[in-house]
Image 1 (spheres, rainbow, N blue to C red):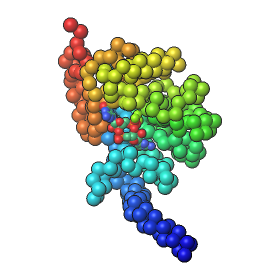
Image 2: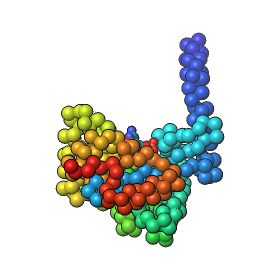
Image 3: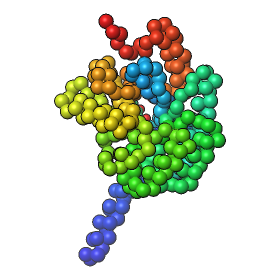
Image 4: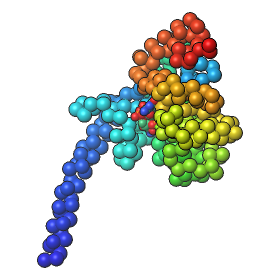
Length: 290
Ligand code: C2E
Ligand code: MG
Ligand code: MG
Ligand code: MG
């Protein structure tokens, strides 16, 4: 009898877990098909150089246009893609798309490095490393990879060696979401990274909190001491931009400058920006000196 009761409990537990498990399986199947059918698309978010007041580079962010669920953002499918072993295929597709879009931008007269986000898992994937390097090299593409520190900490020796391989083929390495994950200064100093992106967690309340400006300023100083350029992500207000400028932050990215936009909207953005630059040689969102 006791055994029967245990079994019944197990069944109840399985049933209650059944719905999400089924959903996940369906989503996994749909995701695999979407990657194979190229149903994903990219949006681009520019990054602006504060002192030069010009567009420094852009970041590609992947989206999934689902036939019934609508627009699915990466937070809702990247972890699943990692879990089911599809992240390598998705990232290689992203790289291929970025290289094609970069050629369109080049034809418009824009020579921009485009960054893509690389999951930690892929830093241990030799087949991915080889394919990605071969693609970048054969197209002579100006590509950056954004990686998080947390992804390096899992297997630092292998990850650092692969990052060095990327750097050797001319890929710019940026540390993404700095401060939001597991940080180790011991690894930070060993990474062949040229850029450090401060997580938006510290930037969104920059002008309304006491501690965030202290953290951001000391992170900027740390990165500069390590000879890295610093980007603040999540810049939404003029006040945040003004403070970051005073603190010596090199680049900014966020809704104040632009939301992530389609390649066509990005081409338009670059055209408009050039017009603005021609008018008064100053990016419109920067306040003019009195
Ligand atoms: P991330 O690389 O840190 O990207 C920044 C995220 O912040 C993006 O969300 C972007 O839309 C959002 N964001 C940008 N500016 C602002 C702002 O001013 N305010 C606020 N509140 N948010 C802002 P998204 O596109 O949903 O991407 C989320 C994360 O998904 C990315 O974080 C990245 O880690 C991951 N991801 C995106 N595309 C890929 C990909 O192709 N491969 C992998 N492995 N991960 C990706
Ligand atoms: Mg990123
Ligand atoms: Mg980021
Ligand atoms: Mg982030």
